[in-house]
Image (cartoon, rainbow, N blue to C red):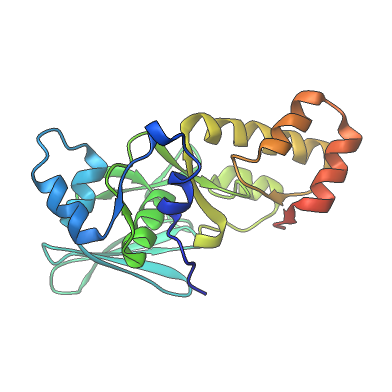
Length: 223
């Protein structure tokens, strides 16, 4: 089911007003970026994308040069040349595109984590794109974006849009630490936002009983 707001809109609205970026239609963002002197790497990627579509198990990103990438929610990807011929595969289940437990690929020469590409593709498919993704991180709610972590917790890699969100780098790092604490404490895997303020407060408070109660009452088990 398509959400009313893109992932970019949802996150942008949580930021202080002076830290927000503009959310516009993809062609409008591309028009602005095209005339930007100091575009960053992610803006350049957005500029060269022709279209993006969401499917049940993957997103498909087509570039203006004619090449295409299919990024699957189970953590693998496929690259196609301008003639539609499969060029290469990588990610989960292969020896290619894995680094420090994370799934990475080159997107038209730019290194990028797979979940980041999926989120950008979702924003473009929704036609509500951020003018700048600078300092934004792609967070995997149940931490299954790290293959080593997923295997240790006995859960499947899940990079589906419902398990992804934009957040700040500091939120992403904090999320990782909190997830490890919850697994160590309960032995269960939960899916929650990196910006959950109530959860942060309970972690700081250090009352494990209250923390367990909060998890059971408010958080969705991922595994």
